[in-house]
Image (cartoon, rainbow over all chains, first blue to last red; front, side, top):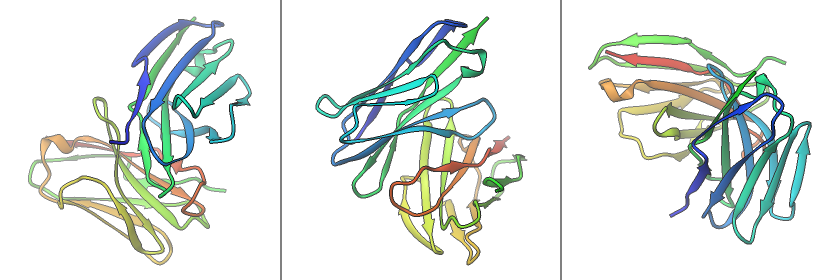
Length: 111
Length: 113
């Protein structure tokens, strides 16, 4: 069964600290993997997309990695800010264009 | 460029009633998909429409239905509401079906009492 699992379920860090969110998937065939950020009360917004041939991609303070062999991805947030408080959702796409959603990691950044 | 617009923003209904939610996609986007989001289940895919045709469907009962109009606007209908239907319903559009990001609206918060 195609699944996407995210860990941790929730995370609390202090402003300025770094953190890493994990996404493990069993989706096959694999097309791409996206990370979305969802602020409270708003819809998710795409942060980055990873395809099979990409290992690392950065978007400002967000760095996503992909290991297609172990079927793992991570999202690293550097020098966290209060505005990083949100849910982060990992979404994996099959070749048939079917999307498999993770249940998300809820990140809270405190001053 | 206007984003995805969902109406209404909040809705309170009682069990047994039916409800219709509306979604206006980003101009030029022909694919519209709907999702149910609850704290315990995360985002659950309902269905996707492309050029007025339902292309994919999730594992939801027949009480959940949708349609897309020629201008790409979409509606979702839930009949015979149950308490468990209380959730945030999100609509997303994208430019073409394959390999483009979903652009989500801010959702309709449905509460069933």
